Amino acid sequence: MVVEPGGFRTAFYGDNLKGTQKDSADYKATAWKTHKENVKNDHREPGDPLKAGKVIVETIAKDDLPKTLLLGSDAVAFISGQLKQRLQEIADWQDVSKRTDY
Image 1 (cartoon, rainbow, N blue to C red):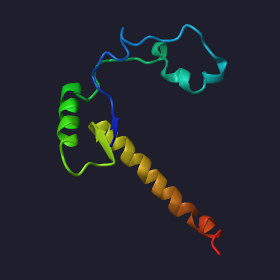
Image 2 (image 1 turned 90 degrees about the vertical axis):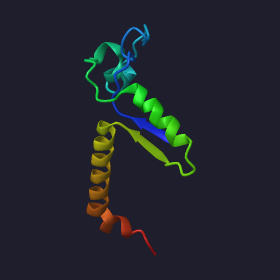
Image 3 (image 1 turned 30 degrees about the vertical axis):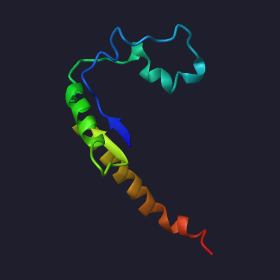
Image 4 (image 1 turned 60 degrees about the vertical axis):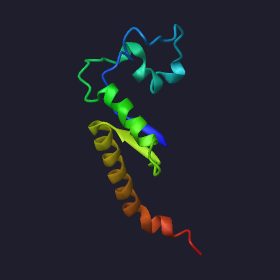
């Protein structure tokens, strides 16, 4: 089971997160965006970490596990949107995709 959490009210971006002292230009356009200094944590994330822990424990105790467990309403909204976009792209390009069949 893969757990995909949304935003949770934790101290992750607080004093607990230690960043690197060395910057690399190779990552400025990608990883740097989530570097400690660039992320504002307003502590208004919708997720409750205690509830998340309980849900994970309850879920793994079941016989039928999901392949992916989304945690939080924001995670559900984000992944649902991504899947809708992906399905639309498949529909838009299916004629091209199918041209490779024998």
